[in-house]
Length: 236
Image 1 (cartoon, rainbow, N blue to C red):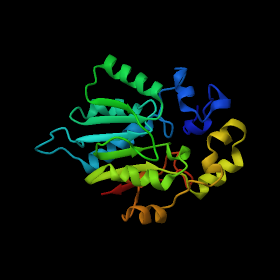
Image 2 (cartoon, one colour):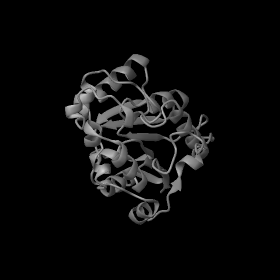
Image 3 (tube, rainbow, N blue to C red):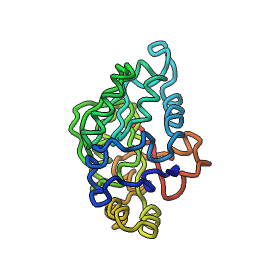
């Protein structure tokens, strides 16, 4: 699969492409970050090192807690759990199957600082708050992006960060032009323009000016970064 794996994926059951439980329950899926693949954990680590450097209280650095919303196979969490053993990582996904797979892998690897639960946007059921909330390749599939963004920001602790990518008008144009069949149905909210956002829209929603995440982590040169793959970091 290409670097933009989420848009190039071969779905196990194209007729049920929007049903993530059907997709993950087969067990026949790649453990990859669906945008950026191998580059993503390192980029997130760079962001964490910038905002949560080592201190007297946390000699290894890192935030106290990180949530990945729409975590899927959670490759970012598994890699970062080794680098930041004092950080508690939480992965949330709508699919009970991928959550169970992740729990099983965490147990096999002996990771006691990685936790998983079933949860989904646009609202989040967890009562926890986090220093960092991270959401990649997920808002494409959420019809009410405004509520989803507000919900994630509500779960960021004061002084923390929300990092997420989102569909915009350029994403809509590309998907509408290129996607057909099951893939078009899978990304129907973007194709139909139902869940598009912009920097200005996000600032209006949250009352805080977003920053370009790709620029913050030095990723503008990567092939998966472009006008149609915007990603922001919003401080709280």
